[in-house]
Length: 100
Image (cartoon, rainbow, N blue to C red; front, side):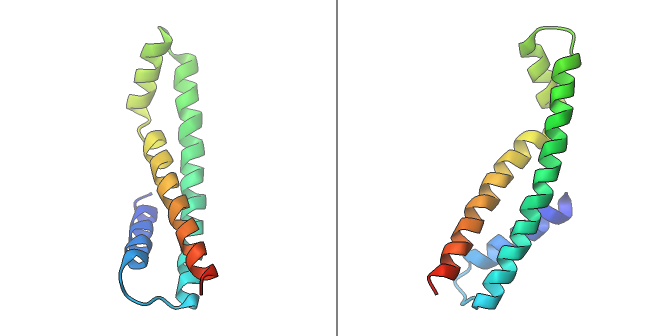
């Protein structure tokens, strides 16, 4: 997951810079970010399954089960936030491609 995060960071940093970005480079950035979105989705789905398993198997109240699951599976919240950020940047890159 660390490699995915680094790639996302590099692409978004390059896109947000003030330098000129060619259409070809924008398409490559979009393709790379789309791939990262796909990989993050895989991590998110696995984390969601693990979270649900903990919730289901926990012996106690639902509130305590939720706390336990969130403590043991922090990737779920992290990947949700990252997926939102990646999606918004994909939209911005797409819009930049359409405006050229």
